[in-house]
Image (cartoon, rainbow, N blue to C red; front, side):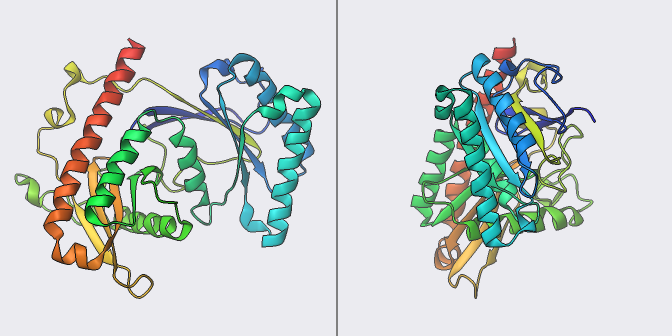
Length: 334
């Protein structure tokens, strides 16, 4: 088994290294100072001694080189256990890691570790990866500010900015993230991206009747979408760090690089009877980012123009942030 690298380009460009369970600090092939985040995956049913020892080894080595590195622990395959056993195993893994770090040195007790229960049979894995991604996006406060303004102007109780390829949400407004709402948005986005490519037209000359798809076909360099995130081998270590974006001639804006005007599809569905009086809306913001928001049905039906007007301004704000991040990444590499 060897390290598999995945290119992941959203608001910021990243490269994700998927490492096998037998990887060590010495056999990684790169210094830990290169990485911004280390994600360690532990099978919730595994014998904890060996994976905990390997996790502590990486934490000690990374802290000596890069004290600012982020550490995340995914306790994976949570669906295999009953609820009580799941909580107990999760608690035991957390305690063993903390105790082993304390045995190494009291200073390692202060290392911030984030533990997540994850499973591929629900959206907990996407939510955990989303929270990891938030720590790597320097422009996150500006994206959250745009979402707060959108929610305030449209009476929306909740809004997300999703990456349509990976189903990770890059930002949300200040209200707490409700798991049921997050799952609902993920399911709706999955449905749109699955059936959207079926709606095509031969009228390519008019962008209004062009390809009706929530998300264009992703570039071949992106990770495959079936699992929504890179495959997880347990136990394993996954690292992610920003990398340079692909070069574009003369750093032209995205619109200027496309021969045809961009087309931004939208969709909406009523949530009755599960959420009476609520509509879930979808608006494409960039070729790979989409705004999903809960809206009062009365606002969506009677003040549709207000909603669309705020979507336009939100789209412009996100595109400006996206272009600034691209320019900054290019200048850092240069």
